[in-house]
Image (cartoon, rainbow, N blue to C red; front, side, top):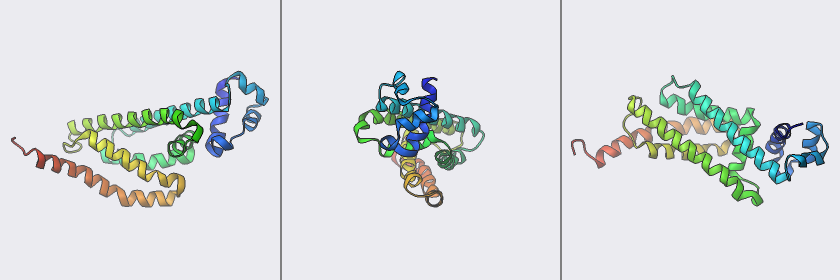
Length: 204
């Protein structure tokens, strides 16, 4: 029995029950081992949790890259709008997304610093990837010239605000907020181009 089997079982239990609620005995039972056998691979519950959470972030990162690869043929607005719908489905269907998202919003108090050491690089990486995506869309004429970094930060802020409904609300409430907010957000993104033109008039 490998550490990977223990980690995969732990992923389900931590995503469902949280760090405090998950039982090492239940994880061991699911794998088919005795609880002390876990310590041959992980020093303690905290160690198992952090390895599992790190794996969850890697899974979500990989799935997100796959989403953009599979939808590269779509206009940028459809890709970004679709990402929000896709992410809610990921949360419902994959324990890795549930574990990651819940710990972004309320990590175990005793592990706050360690968890944030995973959260912030993930968010910063997403922001950089979005900025590059926007820059490419500008070069290809998919969107008008806008400050790509500013637009990427705005999108991440929008995502942060709306995904709260995934955890505390329901799919219906999430969809309602997304449908109402997206046109306002996207029109605001386009207004960045007008603001830039006012600040730096053409020909200057």
